[in-house]
Image 1: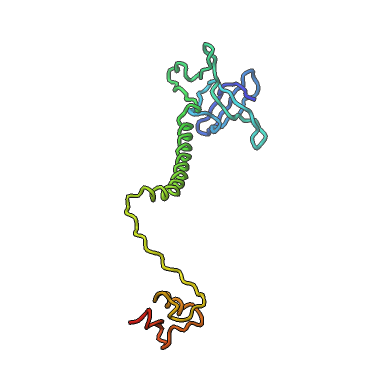
Image 2 (image 1 turned 30 degrees about the vertical axis):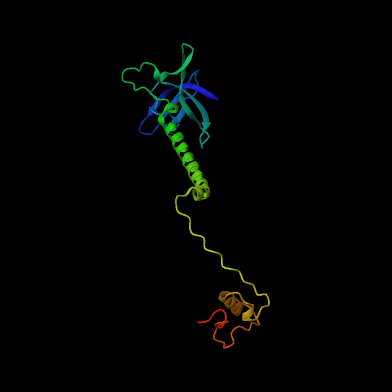
Length: 192
């Protein structure tokens, strides 16, 4: 519940003062941390909430400058013509601090979105760039014939030197290296 009152006393050195409630009653303690910036002047109309401190005593919280009705519109009293020697106050809700905070958050979110989008683009681009790449195509090397051990054992059954070497190295029971020098089918396919 919000109450209305005026800043009655203020001790600048100690950073606290008292608000006198409208309609009377005991003065309410107010700490500098509960006041809007710049700080209100003595006898300035304020609205506030009341809470209890750790010792169970009343204190003012959420202190704001009181709004006054002017021609059907709510206007901050500080926007009226300033008194001589009185600095106009600034409503903290209209200060640039909130706008800066929103801007920083927006930039961070935008950065995250750009980073995530860049990752998707990197995953997607290689396929696209391979299709449209101006780099000349790599020459196609004919595939190495695949050989399989199929029971053949003699040089007369082979079709190339490569096939004879594969059978000698990988297949059991072949009879292609009569002199045991590691070169198969020397007379038919792998002769020197």
